[in-house]
Length: 454
Ligand code: SF4
Ligand code: SF4
Image (cartoon, rainbow, N blue to C red; front, side, top):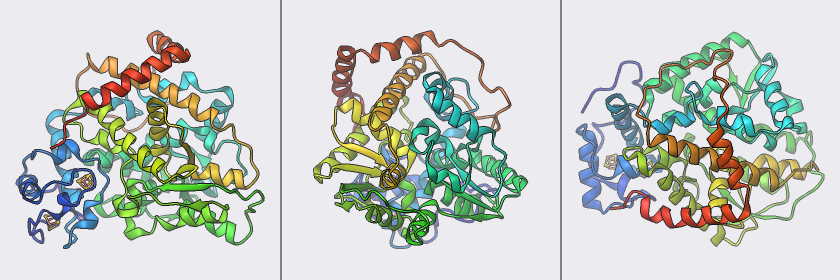
């Protein structure tokens, strides 16, 4: 097996304890490989080879770590193999989409579609001097600023939104870009320490886990300051009656457990459910929850061994999730991760689902009597993002793979551009008949273009 670099070495796949039993990939909710195939696959990955299925079909949901009877961390083995592929081939062109320091990234392209109110919120969050208790808004909610923009919840914090924190490396970690994540970890640590603030509260569990576990234990970048989990914080404020539930909801909701919620020995699953109960919601669970939860689709983009299939793989996985949520008969699905939320909304629109999908913060805000422009804001943003994704897909036909060099954004990171084609696509997708035809084409394409299962 290829040795792990000295820079990341304390929380890795335990090759000596692995019995090659194959249970990890056999029980995998996405692949469910026959046991013999699962055994061959683990052997292949251990030997430093690509294998046949896992590297191209894994949705990086991290469930396999829970299935291993010897706590070997097979998920970390997958990440190492993806890191090998990145070092060998670079990242596919379409991945620049999520790299804020690359031209043509999602935040740059979305900027032209933000409302004035959204721009004002974001500008405030990106330019505030961090002090006191800092709320890390993060790269995902930056795409959906209306989720928390204008809320009284922000009065408790200094909201800070720095795109070149890359969600503390969370989504690159899932793609196996481990060497890049270590550099991001160093930048975040230096920034946080330089701020000298009291407490850091990441809005999502993924970033909480990165700061408290992955960066110090796997990337050798200890983070020496107080970090508080947002859902724990909110639950305490509700229970201490500092935050009042003045408008209890009578919604039946189902809860989407994101991939990072499976880290941390289960600490992330219950607080969001407790918050929902406090707001008056009744919870009906999906077939796959907690350690077995299905991916929102986002993680399917990590298996980028066949770049042309990425978008269709993502949407295929997202459709499965939406169907499972619909099958519960719940009024709405609630996500406690902003990354899953924008992906699920995009899929909802493309597949024509009627399921309501909320961020947990939106549920909390409604229970506090705050008014939302729901679902209009989400629908509008979903089509903005569909236009951007379509645009990047077209460009990716002519683009080549790349390496992530820059971690930090300078003052004016993106060249001023007109993006005429993107604007035309967005305008066209605003016409109902074109939108309908686009959805139909997409629904036909997904089963044809997704990476074939075993
Ligand atoms: S991370 Fe999830 S999808 Fe990937 S192999 Fe493990 S269980 Fe399967
Ligand atoms: S990682 Fe664990 S579950 Fe997977 S083959 Fe090894 S021992 Fe079995």
